[in-house]
Amino acid sequence: MLEIGFIGLGNMGLPMAKNLVAAGHSVTGFDHVETALTELVAAGGQSASDIASAVARAEIVVTMLPAGRHVEEVYLEAGGILGAVQEGSLLIDSSTIDVATAREVSDAASQKGFAMVDAPVSGGVGGATAGTLTFMVGGTGEGFARASPVLEVMGKNIFHAGASGNGQVAKICNNMLLGISMIGTCEAFLLGEKLGLDAQTFFDISSTASGQNWSMTSYCPMPGPVPASPANNDYQAGFTAAMMLKDLVLSQEAAQTAACETPMGARATALYQQMAEAGSEDLDFSGIMRMLQGAL
Ligand code: NAD
Image 1 (tube, rainbow, N blue to C red):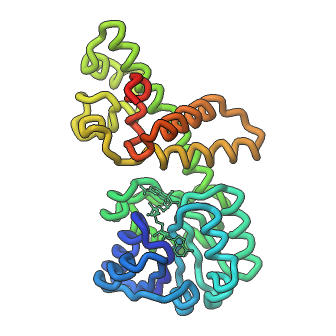
Image 2 (cartoon, rainbow, N blue to C red; image 1 turned 30 degrees about the vertical axis):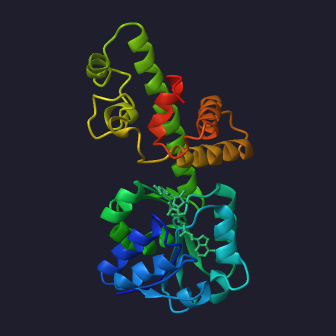
Image 3 (spheres, rainbow, N blue to C red; image 1 turned 135 degrees about the vertical axis):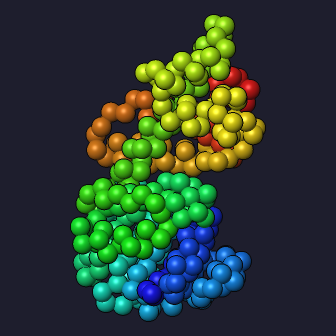
């Protein structure tokens, strides 16, 4: 049994923390949202009244926060994790944030003698609840080895992506590709339809041909071919267009700092921005089909 401090008990963090409790760990959580703390306690965890008391006894600290500025605040500011955690603790940030902040916070932790890994996830709330998340981990080999047994409680696939920040790099590169492939898949179905090709027939052909991709075969944006996809449920999320836009914006910021041309990533970002501006950011990201159909 490990003493774990958990900061950020939102849609993702709360079910992740509950899985750590269910595995027999002693979890002390903190969030500004009171109901999240009540739920953690009901599941067998402990609640703290601030960050410092949540992490004071922790051997492992896990954070699951909205964005880079929250991670900076929670780790670096007065009353934050780095000023309160005990010697030898391992710090795991599972938030999806910009690469630069991930590396900056990890450097600050290592200057104070703490091992820290960035470990963003894919798998959504469903994966967080079922304990089947994919973790993409950046940090030293030793940090990865120490984090793995805890991450294995919350996830199914745990990858070491390399040095600090590389977990975030893997996450944004994957999601940039996902956004691009989703839009491409929509366009292929729409063009086929306009030219008289039945959607199911196109799916049967393309899903076994070279156009095959995850956005088509597991998450088809055209209603019909994949019964479990959000397209068959009025594009209810799922993974919202707002979350896709967040990850695409992160990819474009990173591309700029790396002086890397990503014209398709830039176009996908602009199209998801347009979807958000049309007031549809809460739809599933495959709902961009509707915008391309001219229905938003
Ligand atoms: P969320 O907004 O539901 O939860 C974030 C929580 O952090 C909130 O409860 C908030 O009160 C808390 N918080 C913010 N600042 C805090 C502070 N200073 N101290 C304590 N608590 C603080 O977000 P989420 O959906 O749980 O996502 C968390 C992270 O996971 C994000 O970076 C997101 O991009 C990433 N992510 C989310 C999903 C998803 O499907 N929701 C999937 C993959 C990755």
